[in-house]
Image (tube, rainbow, N blue to C red; front, top):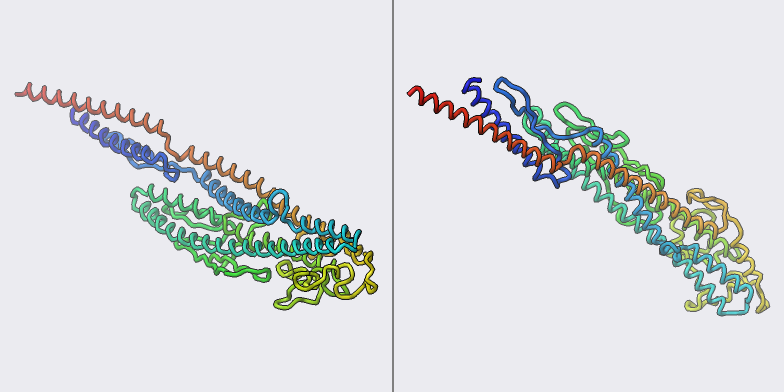
Length: 477
């Protein structure tokens, strides 16, 4: 090897070592950043020796695709579970002490006691107090269910705003990647930021990624709607500020196409928006229909002379004189104990024994219990409930109210199991992806030691050439 060739080799080694050291140092400094993908300086043989031809970024398209899917599933499932946990709080926790079925069972037991001792006015007052508890529990449940829907609607609005912001930011980095790839410049930092945005977007809405020329990306939702293609598509939503049982929420539109709500305890939703739509438009309204039917069943059970008896309801601003024959949206929010039976409102609790609307005990027999016995028997009588309640349509009121608790618990149990499974899958997927893309400090430090040795070898070569040059000049001179 000539001296000039040796010098060129040493210079090439110095350049390569400097580049590799810079890449390794950057890896070390970003080792704790989960959004950073490890870099590697790639060497190739050239006429002047080895040369760094590119800085390659660690990636795995298949694992990234699975990771995005796992993020969207886990995010949706956690959102669904949170909504169901909110419904469970309406029951007062694991003992269900605040559930309508609990109060209805107490009403049944005390009504039977009153029927056994119909002359006891104190027992009549106890029954009226129990009935008030039943009505209050249904009123409270309605308020909380509609509050849950309103909060879900507000969360949807926030998620849509965040999604639009992320898509705008995604365009910025996608443009950098495309132009940088076309010009041959380093786009690794932009790729890191773009992948980070993909993860954040997938938590809001399920996506599929299509890579095109120059590393350009197009995004589609899980159901195939275009979300981003050169430009972000418009994601629009109008928030509904006030909810009641008669109000339907508005859809979320992506480029004019509705996002579909999820379904089931093991939710089919992808991303938080679809899960929030499921809570707002499916889970909460179904439970509302159940408590509305419980209210209708109670009014029907205690009707007197074809009109509301123990229980009545407000039809707008007026106390209704009609026993509803079909599902009445929001009935659970307006059911109440008939004022004619409430002492504080000038009523007489003993009318429950004798008849609220029609005097069925004209002789005022203290032991008259025919009406009370009929009410007690009604607790065991099957009724026909609306199919939209999602429960068996032929049950007694008490059975129906108990089945409503079971419906929520069944959904919540399925959601809890699914949440654990999807979280575990996400953790495994992220671990597998990080094993490919994350920085290993041990490997990077070992590489730096190797580069140090390479630098020393090149320095020795330069020193040897210098000695030879000095010897030649001395010999010539």
